[in-house]
Amino acid sequence: MLMDLKRMRYFCTVAEQGQISRAAKVLHMAQPPLSQRLRELEEELGCDLFVRKGRSIQLTEAGSVLYRRARDILHAVDATRDEVIRVSSQSEPALRIGLSPTCKRFWLRHFSRLRSHFTGRQIGLVVGDSTYLEQLLRTGELDVALMQPPLHPQDLAVHEVTISKTAAVFPAWLVDESIQTLSLEELGQHPLLLLRRSVGVGSYERLLHCFNEAGLTPNVVLYSSDIDPLLDVLKEGFAGIAVIPQTEAVSMGEGFRVLPIDMELPDYHLSLVCSKPVANPALIEQLLGVWTN
Image (tube, rainbow, N blue to C red; front, side, top):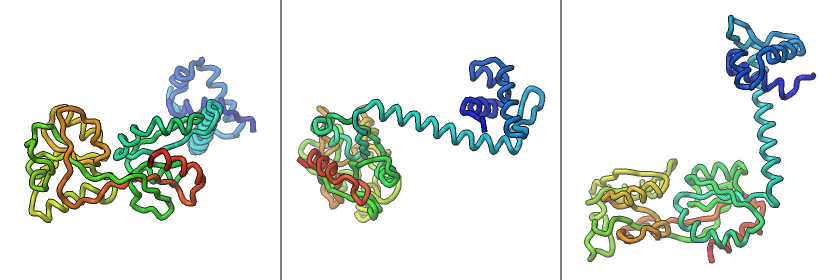
């Protein structure tokens, strides 16, 4: 079969544009040669690919089959080209790391050390909540992830990096200076900005359970799977309290306070997670050395 990639692209463009004249403009070519390429394709396959209705055209059943297959082929060709270009542009494969929003500032504090250990490799970073990172680990699209322990770790290896307590962040003027630990009752008196996983039970549900057990109704004005929006709201002047991991509350600057919370809340366990069985134990040891020292 003489059908080539160029004619596939011509055919798909015409199918998507619905008019040969419009497709010719998209392809930056004259209409007659484009019409000729389509006729050649139909002659080669021995069937009509389009039904012509005035200036518009519609795919026949055979044309629809060819369009679906051709798009798959063209996508595969484009992906292969991009991967070859990406690999040829670097001396070593990129180190693909997933990062949970609950670990961002911890990550930043250790980036220079990480870079010094992997000077010959690019570092590719994917930021997403733990549920999304779990999916990427399982499909092999990440080498490791710095995240909270997965909800379903059966096929994942989990290495604890550090433990973080829960802390409250708020404008310094919001709470009396004499208060050094926030109680549940104190939290209940202010608008709350809370972390919440996109899937599953986490710190959000546990904190609300504490309020319920104490007979209190919290004023939750915003929840997010990412810490940054919670802190950004405070930086914009909102008079509320963000409840986040202690490790992520270190860079708020003047005008803000960070206090512990006087209640039994589960700690945040920042962990290095990878697929199991571990494909590269030496890499895991290196990363643990970077993030635990």
